[in-house]
Image (cartoon, rainbow, N blue to C red):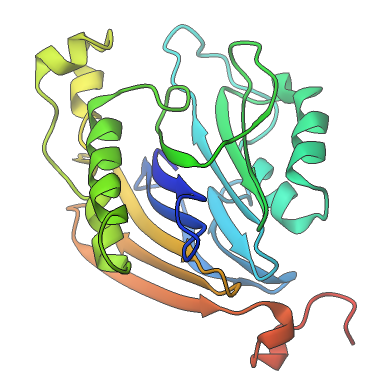
Length: 269
């Protein structure tokens, strides 16, 4: 992912609300969100080049998402793909705290990243730059792009303000959440300069929804969880001109309530 706007435990009815964009080169092969045959309870898109994912959720309520940490001074390739990280957490059974504690010991194997990992009880954040330890997030409203959590980039601040307004209304919908990350307008140079974003690339990537030659927003994902345990997910896919090219929506129930018997967890016969 390259932009996530989310609310964690601000509502008893909706413990987690997320709106997110994945920005990537159009030439990079990608499979849209689906349940993975090897992990039947996992719903996520798939990076067909490296095999990982950028964001996913499981019927057990595990959630993970990763963004790149943009550092123009570090251009050396890393030995491992960042897309491994959400998949490794989602496919396992470690708590967010234990998984991130273990990851912190080997995080230098990856290029700069921000990782969110959570379950029905907690949501954790870890970045492998800056030397900070993994931390549990307090109930609140957050924004994450290609800098550290809540760095006040214009597109992050705009999304957070819209989510705050949405939180104060009644109910939630995928269309409402999608608007949090749908603005295609580039930020004005002054607001970017206030954050030290001064080059041409910063201006190009300053919109929430990016459309450029060869690179742009490939998908927008919205989700929320309910106090009942249900998870609502929708992914919209986009083509090279920013046009809608596909959509998938799912309502996921906990394993004990699921009527989709073909999607049994591993080891259930």
